[in-house]
Length: 415
Ligand SMILES: Cc1ncc(COP(=O)(O)O)c(C=O)c1O
Image (tube, rainbow, N blue to C red):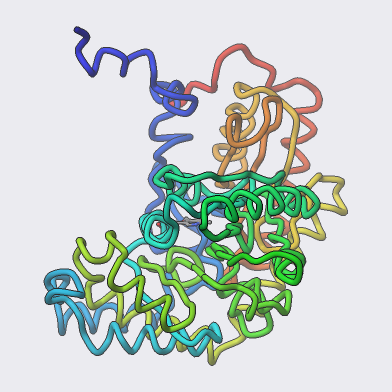
């Protein structure tokens, strides 16, 4: 019999296989100093485009004060236990109430983490008789939730409504045989490409088919829609979303997540979501701090306005300079280049070391082989000068890429 760990050396996975060369630089980099567009990387200040701090709230003095006051008053332990047993509080309930009002849903349940919350909500809501139809580019938390699903699932081509309908027809037929129902799952904003899920078109399919719609709006909450209530608001179809999920990890610049839905659904989730029943409640500073963040999102539209000013300048400037930024219609800004993984590392190294620009680099298997994606996340606290500096730097590294300057056999040596 084999030692169960024997395979770990040769099966590090598509990302792990680069660990020895990349660790600490391309993977697991440490950004230091106050969260914002300028942070230190290996001791040197960089212009940073890699944080999902869309509205710039992470380091806002009012947010910092709310967090620290709550930490001083309650510490990090309170409340102890899962909410069902001994960990509920008026603050947790107030945050749920405020969120429900903001996203225009009758009720909300708080979740400790987004990833774990989505997995667990799918597990709770869908049984072996039910059939799921989901977008091919759905986030890992949706895919992993579906791994727990004992019934059938049909994937549709990313954002392809014809294919979605085709899979709905198959799912409907099957659910009629099994006696179950159908759930469609997609994202509001796809975090890599920046495209929006076609929520309005999916909701329109409800006229022909009987299904419920689950939307993960991690990147849309706070950034999309007139009030920032998300992609459903943006597309005018919030009512048609049966399960509205978002995380606090992006616009809310915190930790935790929530689901908004009808009261009987939320009540069911409160009593059946294993990740909530069997896990400690969110600590008070996160809850009180989130109440403050939400109040700021609701009452201070300038954060979203600033974000979009930067988004338009960055995306417009990149396009004018001839860059391919794909099909984004949201703040997520991919810059798509062609090259190998070694080229991607040499380009990124040059960008970081010689132009002092830090952004995320995405390669195969997240994007197809031969594509290098530099992913920029504009925020409300970037400036127009930051945009100009970045576009000039991108022009320079792109011309080096095109002239073959980064064409090397090996990854950039960084350690
Ligand atoms: C689309 C999407 N869903 C869910 C999550 C997970 O949220 P959390 O970080 O709160 O676990 C993320 C990433 O944060 C995400 O991008």
